[in-house]
Length: 93
Image 1: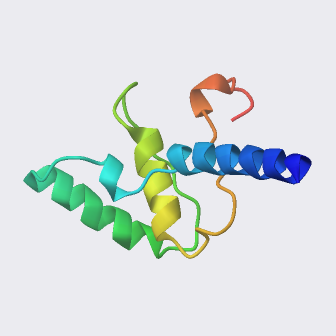
Image 2: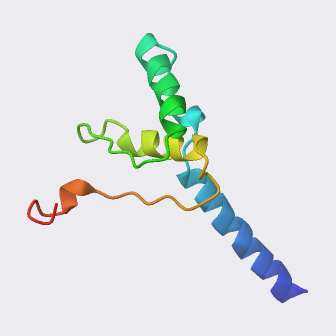
Image 3: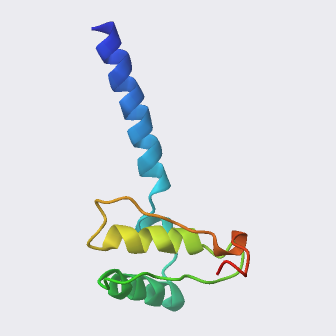
């Protein structure tokens, strides 16, 4: 029983960590016109079947937008792969 309880606690901690890493609209705060437009665009883009390239300055929230698109899409139950293109040498691109 103790082993099962510890295992369950480990699973719960891991689940909570994964839930925290996944963004939804609650992490995209603000109700300004540009923010509402962004949220509407996320919903539209999430319906697409192709890949998405999100560009922007450092710290602009690209990862949050990517997670929101993933969670709104048809593949939300599957893993999401994020690639930091800036870390890839230009000759490999």
